Image (cartoon, rainbow, N blue to C red):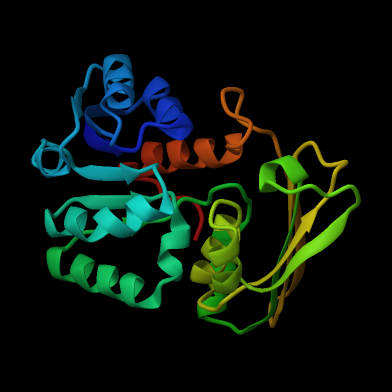
Length: 252
């Protein structure tokens, strides 16, 4: 059975721990020891407050469910310890130097870096952009003023540009666009809208290319435990973990 080291003990970490089927979580790390202990108790694992000791635990793969900062700080060290890595905070990979460095280390160590689909559908098919040109790759995201920390009495667009620019301004809100760009092999265009009438996050994908065109709209239900977290994003990482060892691979 696959052994997971959990890096980050927030809402997604709790969901992973409570739905650990087909894998075990023997090691849990967080900068706040009490949070690590809480999740470790849920999954009969061991809590770590020292990252070096956490890396020495007997695990096959480390799941980063913490933050962009944590992913940037620890990803390379995880790979150097010959452990596969799941990066939930994919915004970290907008740093081209970091991304290329991690890929190089993964090649050297024979490890893999996994990016879950997160809060969107259709990401696997976006990968056709690496083979056949995509002429339009646009993500339009609509969120409430509260989720963006803004006072906005009317619906308005607050950003229009490239994903790598948007992540600098809204690091917790546009991981979807970064994942899209990585899948397609090109930087995605992003429109970020704030709407006081929105009670759920809405992601709309517009994709055009030699294959034709597609439109996908996803209305995300917040996690029951934390409205700031997409429940779909949490489920996507569970799906990834469940299928890593499967002999039958579905999707591109």
